[in-house]
Length: 448
Image 1 (cartoon, rainbow, N blue to C red):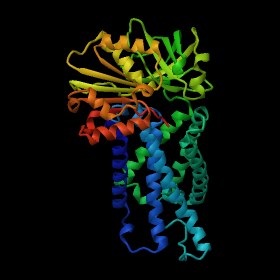
Image 2 (image 1 turned 90 degrees about the horizontal axis):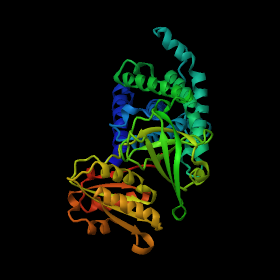
Image 3 (image 1 turned 30 degrees about the vertical axis):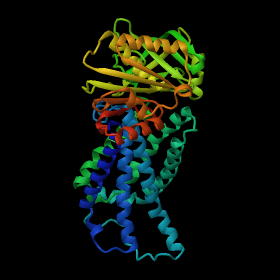
């Protein structure tokens, strides 16, 4: 399943780093006292933590060249999130090995052997000697940077923490990352650098440093931004939803149905991601967004997005593009998750695909007559069978009910966009019924 691509990349990266570290540090094969084990384990945990943070920092710049191998920015951000969680967990172990071991000595749990003198050895070159002279500073910087990073990472995982504050405080991570690179560069075993582990770590750290500077100077996404003006809007009060049409300037490169963009309405609030609800037509240069009041910012959009309002659009991003070569597709758009399917319907109305049968299931808790009539009209124009599923009338939509409506579903691919919990239950249901893992496509639109 393409939605789990980030798990495979994370596991592969950790295995690669572990293998290179085992090759680089033969001390793990030797009998260990506690402090011998501590020295080896601190090196390993330090390598894993700073490597995870480096890749996360690179992904934070939204690099276009990684979107295809990582199957879209939504998957990249999910990988970014789990790299952060990995770095936090490993860093806690790293910190305990350093600080906790001192406490264990004080409590009498372990006994420290005689310390080796920290002066430069006669055969050390000037760089190694200089790094040795910076150990105390690097340890202090690393400890305090760890406390700050841990606090910010925990805040980032708390969904109740306002998005605006999350975006601002998360930027501070770039400066803290630079402090941790200094910590790692000084304290990492010097002989790692002339081995395959060092050959991998050097470009990772260099890429992370360049990315941190990119973030701190406000360059992320700037080259993919365009100005747009609100030209039309329609509210659907029963759905707490706003449909906004924008006229975008020549800086917009065009987009495919299913992609999304970052929309900046208030510079103080910053950019928010929304799926594009329109197919691209260079003759009209119109973009359409359908937004639902799910938080403070989205609830304020009806008051902010008035005709004539100038906004900034950044993108497009994503690979939820419906291109899989299947003769039959099943689309499931739950709630506001219907948005990418609206864009695809409009595209198919202009460019029909007569060789693909499509069933679209729209699950909604509330029925709005105007919105549903528009959806029916778009589906008819695109030649797509529409199934509207109202929770209060039809019960909850699940895999069994979808399969009952679609003969030959075994040969179909499933494209899902909607609440994450619904997506998890649906993929589990379809996999248990025999659908091939590669046939389920899900937009992972939780960017934090």
